[in-house]
Image (cartoon, rainbow, N blue to C red; front, side, top):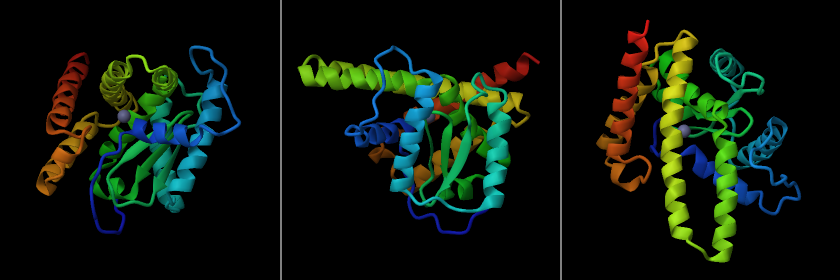
Length: 243
Ligand SMILES: [Zn+2]
């Protein structure tokens, strides 16, 4: 995947942070969800539409029909082997030199120009998109949304806020690991090389070390990324052993 433009800086924004920002931005919105434990597909798609509008306000989208088609073909191959192929999955390109990908509820996936420029193979891009498809397939947005609403109400009551926040952070890491392995499984099932994701993460980690920015990133610490890579390599060897 080749895009012109210079790599200016690299930062990882965990998808969920963006989702939370979007949720806060929507706090005054008249649109409300009911209080049931899980979002229905329709509710999730409605929420996704709102978050997508927010993201389109915050970022410029890169308009390249050919590249878009290529990315959406990859996305549809991956979503076709997921548990939620009924969701209208779409992949958009964000004008940014940072290397990042994230998703909004309801099947909206975003990758940056910087990420596409950095990716060396289609398998690497499929690994990244697979991770985002997995978040949707595993209903992570819905689960975190409920948890987040709970945290906000606890904060208002002033009870055990720090402890709840810590637990929430643990869940974020669990969800990341779950999306990693499930995404790699989707990539494998869809006919991509499952090593695409760990290959990408490994090269990205090297770049972060070279740029000396690791220490600044809470979610991008060396141990977190290298344990993700190690876990993925192990999972992939168990996948290929089964065949
Ligand atoms: Zn993720």
